[in-house]
Image 1: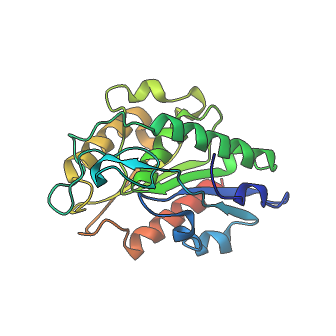
Image 2: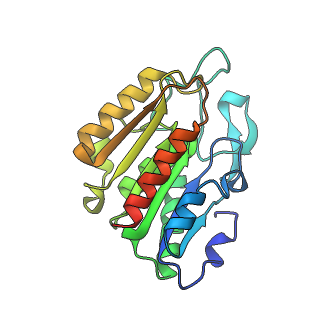
Length: 229
């Protein structure tokens, strides 16, 4: 189960929500307060920052850490995550189920699914894409920062009819040292083929894995657009 109690603490008056998924080895706390403009502009919005379960990660020599799924080929700093990384990673389907349960819990608080944005960074961005498009009810939007698309050969079959036209922001760095540019470009191609004009691309000139300030501004603007519709 998701380890943070946030889902039990949401006020009944909340009218919109952001479910944000952190990256490998991080925690939900690492992203709390990251979307202050959204908090200020969207009435009664609530933010949920769950922790990933702890599990062995192959690229870290089997070390246990918070991880939404296994990563096999990353060898920092020499070898980024690229097209050779398995695109049906172990543990991903279990985490998709966890996110779906989290979304259901948010709905039970009185927030309509189309007023929920699910997003994440890096590994969390990967999960947000797959959990978002496969959710059986229409969501407000999906955000991925420095993530990538999995199930690239069968991606269209993973999309629920409800989210066939969901809005999605795919934000990536053209010199990201962790996620190789060809993987980002292939992911963009897959998402564009599946979602068409509902996909927004945000390519950033950065040589770091983490987002730049302007990139975060774009993400917040996208969230506000989704939650004000």
